Image (cartoon, rainbow, N blue to C red):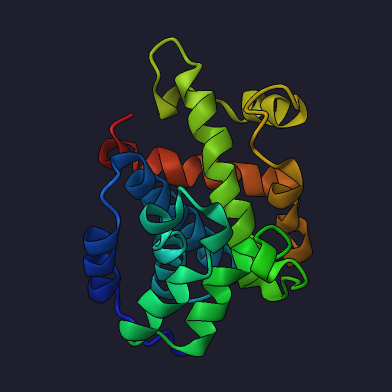
Length: 193
């Protein structure tokens, strides 16, 4: 595992310093949880993978009104915090092919593919929970989540192609959906649903 240059404690401080919106904060914690679960599946460093998930949208509050800057501004924030080139490159990789400045870049390696898949999957899982009568993650069943994945009209802004990048990391879609769902259910108390 490459050095990240940032500890979990530093990552938590960065999150509190740069992210004020509660929904964005929850999304980042959700992505952290899925990345930790994926790391466990690969036998990788769960804390390191979690840090990548936790910090992936660190510039969102600064760029949400100009999304062309997303994944660009974060480079400065992360470098000032002591982040390694590896951490910066991994985090900005979720904007490859999407953000104009990163349009020509391609993701590579399990961590990059899993990051974009995990951070996108959070939206599908949370939308599925909000459709439950009790609005609880515990009520979401895997077969239902699989159906919702196939229904392009459900959570239509959730890019299924990005979630499918889990397969480029060697994790079948059904297994990835299960990993994501279980990891968010395990922190449902922290998330508040």
